[in-house]
Image 1 (cartoon, rainbow, N blue to C red):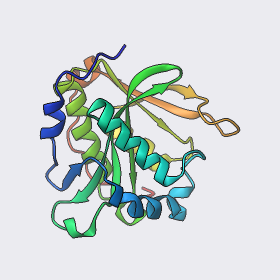
Image 2 (cartoon, one colour):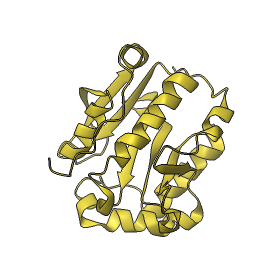
Image 3 (cartoon, one colour):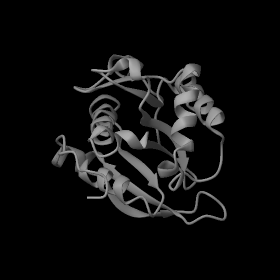
Image 4 (tube, rainbow, N blue to C red):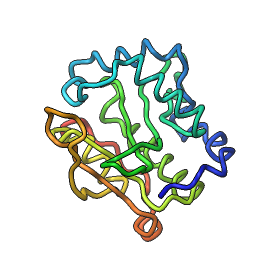
Length: 196
């Protein structure tokens, strides 16, 4: 069971990593998110469901409701590029149970540079060191090998599957719990070229 977020200031204070700037998504990010979802490389792994504008509004609602949700991710050295991806933590129902979910989505031009892992490590640190979560879960399309490797490199392990999109293959369920994180806090993994 998830307790209410009692330390939103921790979330607000986490605004970036060594290479990335993290902030709640804004309405102006809709164009970047539509571009991401229309990218043929990303479309292979995106299930049907909410349109880009609806998903972005859902994330903005999560920030308003919980003080937590996926971030818009920009490059610290090139912020003028705008959002190159989206990801982070949110409170979502997974298999009928409320859970802290990790997700990430990046424009394919920025795959293979370790950005998803870097953002994920910041999210895990926030979850376990700041919010004192008991576990973090992630759902992935079965064929998304690169994202699976990223999750495994930051410490999540495959624990099962969840039929979360009717008519589509069940999503793979990954998880890391607080004891696993404490025993082996993930270090920044080397960037792996896409397809490696």
